[in-house]
Amino acid sequence: MKTLILATRNKHKTEEIQQILGTGFKCLSLNEFPDAPPVDETATTFGGNATLKSVGLARWLLETPSKLSGIAGEAYVLADDSGLEVDALNGAPGVYSARFAHLESGKPGNSPDGENNAKLLSLMQGVPVEKRNARFRCALALTPLLKADKCSSPPCEADELEVATLIFEGACEGRMDTKPAGGGGFGYDPMFIPAGYDKSFAELGEDVKNRLSHRSKALAKLQQHFAKQS
Image 1 (cartoon, rainbow, N blue to C red):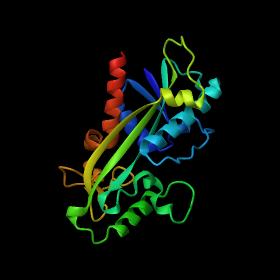
Image 2: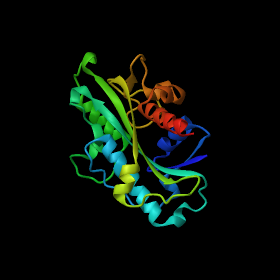
Image 3: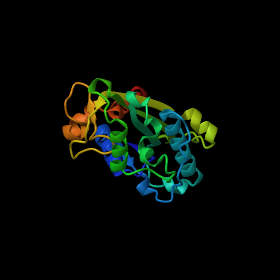
Image 4: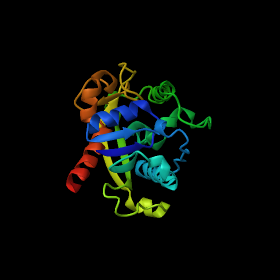
């Protein structure tokens, strides 16, 4: 059993990752570590932000080993940074997807999903169907904490942790609808129609989404990495 400490408090994202990875992994969210400090996402790429979050959380955990007591076997930090790229908006919202509606106001933290979708709808008014191409992108950063044999000390300095961090990426092509549809999913799911389908992620349901999504493709690469190690 591998333990993944996810650098997120997002319940939907945690459940989605656990469902995709299955029983060989135990996923813990930051809700299990309520005093974990926030990490400033200052990078300009998904991979850069994922690495900042993964390395920052790993260093915090390793500085107080008692936080890892009770975790057996192999343990890693897994950080996800993902977002939506819309061609008609020159790739926006991109790395700002989660806080898209708050960019101009300067409010801290992420914006509510409804506000992000409303802003996207407003900006895309009048854009024809053939120019509504978009994609979800995901970058996963995996930083090692503990190995099963415990024979060697884990890296603890930020630069060592960054060198030890692996990146896995995935993308899902599609287009933006003219209005939200469906009650499932989260984020921009009600607006995004994956290529080859005529319904949004929010309408298609978790099983279909988890086969097609950017996150599932990145997680498949992570699983392949671990399979090669065994």
